[in-house]
Amino acid sequence: MNPFIEEAAIVHGASTFYMFRTVVLPQLLPATLIGGLLAFLVSIDEYTVTKSSSKYISTSNNGGFFMSKIALIGFPWDGGASLGRPGSRYAPKAIREDSRWLFNRIENNQIYNVNKKKLIDLSNSELIDLGDIDIVAYSYEETFKNAESKVKQAIDDGYMPFVLGGDHSISYSPIKALHDSCEGEIAIIQFDAHLDLVDKGSVRSFNYPWYSKYLSENPIVQFTANEVHTMPITDIINQVIEVCKRVDKVYCTFDIDVLDPAFAPGSGANESGGLTPHQCFTMLDALYPYIDAFDIAEVNPLYDPQ
Image (cartoon, rainbow, N blue to C red; front, side):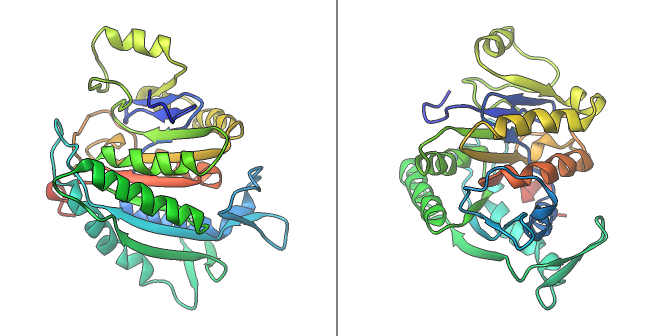
């Protein structure tokens, strides 16, 4: 495990959701994810949130909380796609372009959430785009240092970083930036078709024998895709929230391949048997109030022109 990660919870691919004492979750349709985050900006007061010390959460007039400041940061890097398909470096640009339909519907700082049948007032929220990380094509070390610095600056300025990857190696820098910005433990929630913390690749359904030993020797609670399909989803959400309450900060990383390829064919490495958008929306909607930094990884526009 990376030394700066104290605890972690991981949603391993569409097939598995792992939880250490850090929590890690998946990624879905990027533009809609951003839309869900926008909707969450001012509806946070519907939740009971105990992390009132967070820089990104302000107290509203009715005693609830709302996310006030979010910074989009592009990380167009796929230098870590050694086994998967390269092309995710084009994702930040594609996600921004695909999100235009959403921002075009904001009028007078308001937008209507059809699914929640609710008019959302964005006047007390701030969403800025800090542009892309400075990429040094010949050096991943310099690139990752640039990323860590940019994300750390956003955190220091009171923003919640929302990073648009990029292959999944991009998570290291923002996780480190969040870790170094607090004195306590952090949790990592990972939605992913693969357990990226191991030294060798892992997939849904079947794996090498060492995989069982790895899971038994590390403090990981694993939720497989099959369990997500069959268990009450509220049970999974509640277990993850309990982890979130025990740490100082929570990082969420969403790999698009956690979704079944039928829903998201454009990823670095597809795995059948994944989650549905509805399942991911439901989990993320409940977990947003606890998240201090977020990234979307492995969106590959070259394999999904839509």
